[in-house]
Image 1: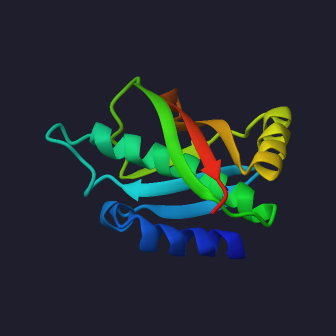
Image 2: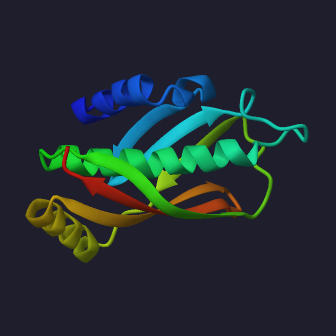
Image 3: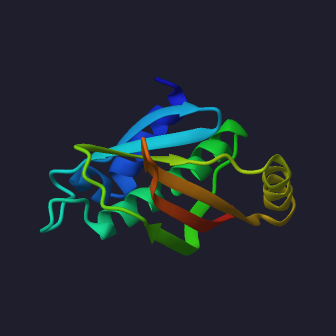
Length: 150
């Protein structure tokens, strides 16, 4: 596994214990898309579908992890927080393993994000995450993340 993914897993376990309780695991980083998975059994509701709060947490953490990996790739670090988010639930999520994937940021937005971070010590990046099945999106999430130098 990539060294940055290993560091992300360690950071999540240390800094966000909810990830361990929810069974969240980091999946491969591919084409600037981070995927994380969690089991349904500890994240289900009374309808035997995924609890909306667990889905929201998973999507938020995928975005947070994406920022973490983007910073690591550039040799940077910072305090990452979510500023605002919007989530839409289209259909119940009932798969035994739930996978959320980030969508790549636009190259221009990413370049501006790093430019501001390097010059001002603070920047913001909007990221989207999806949970899909063969028929399309089950959940879509948009988060605005702020990073400030440590």
